[in-house]
Length: 305
Image (cartoon, rainbow, N blue to C red; front, side):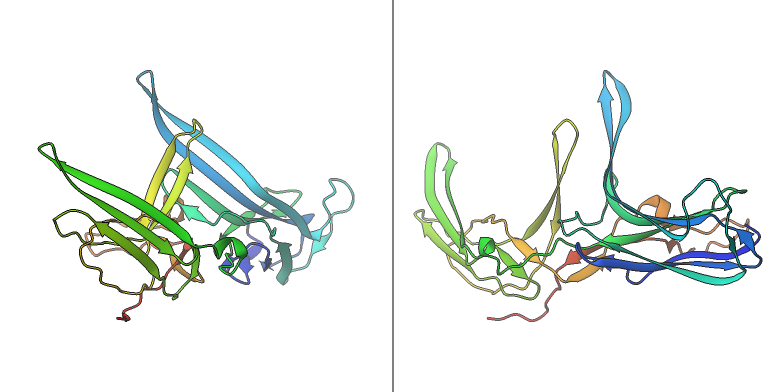
């Protein structure tokens, strides 16, 4: 609008954990006095899923939305349709707001093509005689917090597998692998001590390989499961065990404090430059309006023998 020079939403931080207090303020810089009924602020957390399915030969799109966080506040004026409308004097105004995030384990922010989890602040400037200006500010939820010293994570984890190979009806082996972790939760930079016991009853030499994988699960409305695997690296204690060739798969939780930007960014958060008709073929940088961050484990270049 002509009499609003600046309208912005600013947060104290861009990342929050569940249970923290979200603090920010709305900036309005006006060039003249005008009637303003209220400034409304909404805090929301939204999950959206979108799938392409084929039903009887027809390709359809199935969508589903869920709001698991919805809090509102009026930071200026009153939310009444009748009565005298107050006047906001011209100048620079900053309206503070704060929201208490719930203590429950909020799902962390997530961006992917089939779906996303987003948290945002929506501000509406309620002007009675014009279309109310609106603004949105996205932020990231990191978590949930994991206390690796909690009793449920201090129990040792054990796994066992037995493999027998066949070649032209001749059995080889078997090879029995037993593995154990001291507990099921670790923090960034911590060494994971894995104990492996291999009983090789065959004649061939086998080797042990260990792989850490982060698995993210998404469920369609029909109950089908989509698994996405992300490699995750954590500082481990190197070891050498001869005559082993098994791959133990043990699930564990990692309490991470380090965060990194996500790879996938929704197209609505990419602001490119408009083609001006010039013949220049220089690469044009794309501005990223919002990039979610995820917990990550720092890579360590040093190793302990």
